[in-house]
Image 1 (cartoon, rainbow, N blue to C red):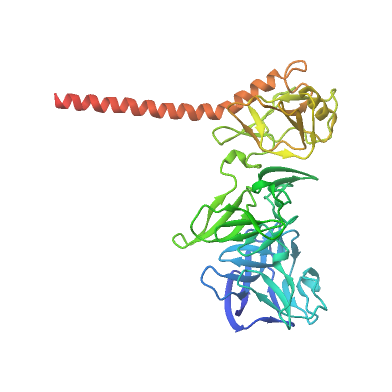
Image 2: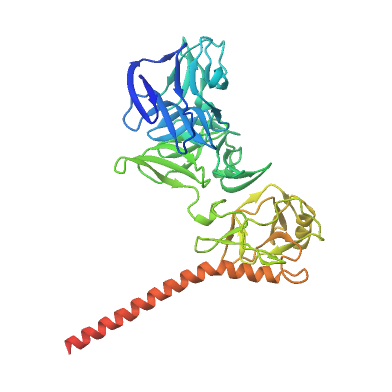
Amino acid sequence: MKLCFLVFLIHLFTHGHCNSDIHIGYKVTIPVPTEYSMGFIGRAFIIESEQMVPNFKVALSVESGEQKYSCSLDVFLGDVKVWTSGHFSRFYTTEKCVLELTQSGDLQLKGQEDRLGWKAGTSGQGVERLNLLRTGNLVLVDALDQIKWQSFNFPTNIMLWGQRLNVRTHLTSFPTNSTSFFSFEIQHDKLALYLNSDKLNYTYWKFKPLGNQNITFIKVSNKGVDIFGDEYTKIDQIPSGGFQPLRFMALGNETGNLGFYYYSTEQGKFEASFLAINNTCDLPLVCKPYGICTLSDVCSCIRFITRDGMNSNCSNGISGGYCGKNQVEMVELPGVTTILKGTNVKDNVSREKCSEICLDDCNCTAALYTFDSGECFLYGLVRGVKQVSRLKESSYMVKVPKGSGGGKGKSSGLKKWVLVVVGVADGLILALVLGGIGYYVIQKRRKNLQNIDNNS
């Protein structure tokens, strides 16, 4: 293990002296720019593992965002950020960003006027130094090398090779400009991906081990994610599908997709050998609110009829707080379903009753009714909606302002409009394909005729 001290200047780094490990009393400072610059990133790499490239590195970072500068402690594998102190809550500062391993053994981030922004909370536990293990685990240890704090206990959106996560542990990721977030959750009976919105969560992918055995923990191995049961025995595996050894598992910040990644020496970057979701329309936030992912993997709109005519804004719908038959109505969208499954379920009800329940619930914006089981799923958002070619087993309904469906309480106007909107993109693509085939056939026939003329 080696420690390289780097002096930060705008976007450049100047190499200084190198020591061994970080010991108590260590302190490094990065100046924060006085003026805001969008896209600005400044890092001082302080620890680097002695491994083949790509190796692990620890950095003190200053990054721009939301018209401010954040200060964080980060761990990198190559150029991929695999852990950060600012995953859940960013520490914004001015003037300076300071990392200090105090005499009392606490690792801290500070800003202007020594304002505390983050700490490991290990003061008085005999911590002697900060180490970076070969697994990428950043640890604080005492004189006997006993771990007092470790980054592996505070997972972000990435799980590294050799890392173990127990039941009720989450990976989380936060899409840009969204109040919702994704989570990968380890439960006793399954592994699942969730879209979390307000206080509600909706699953959009899950994996159950063989024989419905209980899960104790999971671990990333060379060939996939190994699942262990009650007696710490391996009960199942999600295979990577590739030959290269895995380096990490990641929950995508923007897509919410779960992927297994290996390092490609030919490409010089990390590539996915497994993705939990392979269809674009099966991703929960691929379209905007009140959008429909069509059979052609493009987004369309659910648009409403208003007094002024058709509303063309996809995001204009029922945001909550509207309920009762006098203000709103439920409209069925034919040929449409949602990939999301929520925990707010009413059993053994009719479709009409399901519609009434959502109408009377001010927080309900949509409902999915399944005919075979009589289940009614209630939703507080209209996301993850997609078009299907044939759908007879369920009915997807959205809440709209009274009269938006067209006519006197009838929904035929909205139904026809949705069908038109959904069909536009597919119709254009079909026209282009048929046009291309027609052009090819005509050109082929012309060429054959020319050959016949030449031969004759």
